[in-house]
Length: 377
Image 1 (cartoon, rainbow, N blue to C red):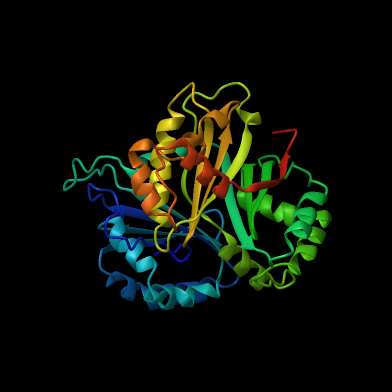
Image 2: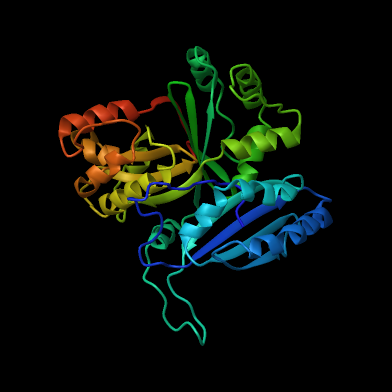
């Protein structure tokens, strides 16, 4: 089951899943409202048989944290990514999972291609494809997330002033959690906020929300949002931020970080993808960046690719001299240039040509509004 991200690729010529047909494991982490455990269990029971009938669904488990009774985990296994993505993007999915909405405070979804299985019937399984990228991103104590929302046309300058004008919050959350970096970008009326912390993201976000200067800035921002929100209503605020959340499709840092990589320039690119093509384009960006980050002398220090329906954002850390490498900045490998161009909304020219690359680069680059780094990071 997956109640957060809705992505589907409807172009027949583009691959929508790992070519080897790997099974898919989905981990859905949920935080439920205190006192809503029985309601949550009843909602799960009401939909589990329906989910079991979805084509491609193999099995799922519901697990509860032994440390925090409000923390739950649903693990599900699917025959392949194609069938899972088709279901997640369907109207039937929205109706099916609706009973969960009233008792769930927040969710996070992770997806992995099954690389190996241990058991009498599964001595060896498929080779690692998409799951390899997640594995390389794992193991770090740094957590990243991204939010995106639209502001009313004509309010961009005022929104930039609000988002850049408040005093940074105290970076120390507790003994285990620290705010490291928050970067805000804009392109036209689209805002992207990339957040990086060390430790517990939930504790960090709660800490930031309690800061009076942040609260004042968020209240000032309300008047300029396309989608209104009520921060005094916890349920409404939670739903807004869930809708604003971007799914992390790929994250990786350089195999051999250089001194100074922590100070690399952070940039963001908003890609004009055609309807239904964001997921396929994200895979091409991830494939490029995985190879680029293996180059010890390359200009790329880190990359994260985020998707929400037809919104595709890539946030990268660029080393000095990156401007001389437009293909790396844009994330387009020459071998994939033609395919990537077909996934975009409108003609972009030959992306093996530097002039075309630089035109698209200029059309995708987001304007940095603020880049707040904690001194203790």
